[in-house]
Image 1: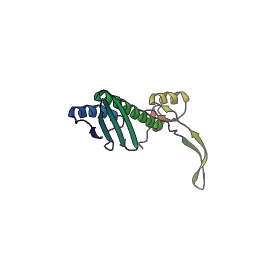
Image 2: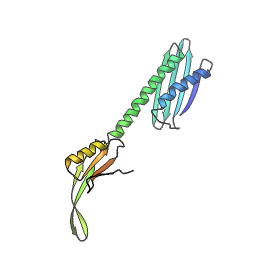
Image 3: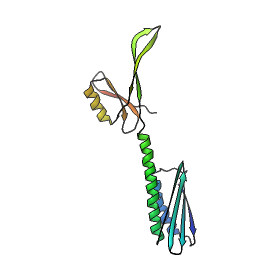
Image 4: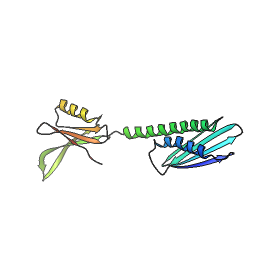
Length: 177
């Protein structure tokens, strides 16, 4: 993350810049280590008002916050809390969107009988797999008596197939894509 500091109406202080950098880098941890993020920090002194403004841009994100108080360090703390809150909400929304996608699987059954050397699709079912952990899927397959179970793996959010082997053990198909 690239940070740019601007001081208005007072002399720039390395200690103040270091303090603001340390506090604001914490907000970036919710967005990852992307070098495409730019943060502009504007610190202003107007008579007895100490104002801190922060603008964070990059990768389709645009956050801004402004706070003022009687102390510049307090203003930096307040604006950091605001930006961190905005970033945390956006990260949670993004995570919810990724989790909320409905994974529907079309299950096709076909007859063994062949017509002109080709197998014929006899019918299909739509199935919405539930998010399960592996141990829950094993328990559900064991109780159902079926030979396989298609489920959405809760840990990696991918469609997996758990199947029963001939010797009674279980196998897992976990696609990499």
